[in-house]
Image (cartoon, rainbow, N blue to C red):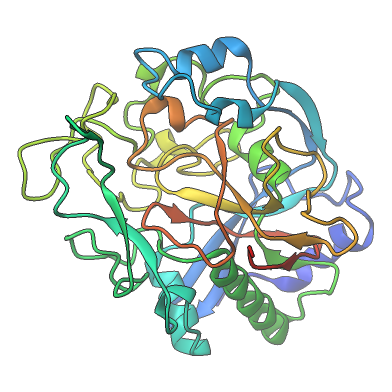
Length: 364
């Protein structure tokens, strides 16, 4: 049991308001016990300043030949202009996205049923009948909504592994996982009310992604795409299962070994940023607590309605295994259609920090 989290160790830096003498060291780690031999690692991220948004030069690169994102859309405008923001409280963040095995442990103990599994539920998955993008009649996308897939079997056509990030889970499902783990930790070791497991705010996520850099680099390691080799999982030179073709868009000019999901932290130290977080670019989209503002991210948590603290269109960040390089940068952000939407490109990682109240409301 010596590797399991000592919840009492959290109390000093909570109760004294994160005074410097009591603050954990940057990159300090704790192991959260999920039971039955399953655990989840978090690392400490101190307060600090960071760059939210992107420069025009970055947007131009993203939609150029190497970045490969489609020019002429509003997508890059969502990033907002590059500007300095500050995260004023330290927090702990999952070293990796929540895995299939960790989410399965939650479901086994709680009996939780995800939105995709409920009557009338749907999730977005890869369409195995898809063969190409460009037809004389127009573009055909490789995804479809289906009623018979879920996190248990996301329809990749490859076996799921406990070490893959969980996908096909909604904002509501993610928050349910966080509530379960918060309650479990409090019952096991007295996690104080000043702390909870939750999704990160958008500012916390954006700060964490940059790994301590105060600049506006395209990726957490810098601007050079070629430095991304053996660091992230994006659209690259990898055959689709059962085919002799790769994703037919702008690809990273190497094989990352995976057409779809890669195991979390697969790239080891090289795949971790300055805070020690793995897979912050590419892999799977990661949800945040905030409601999506198309003009850019906010320093404080953003709501659909401030008085009600409501969220109906969550923000996702970081890109995914299918994305071209230009769509898997630190600044990339999109709004999710609803709190019940799920997709085989979407996942999440948890944050251990001060409570942030949100009231999710369905899109009418």
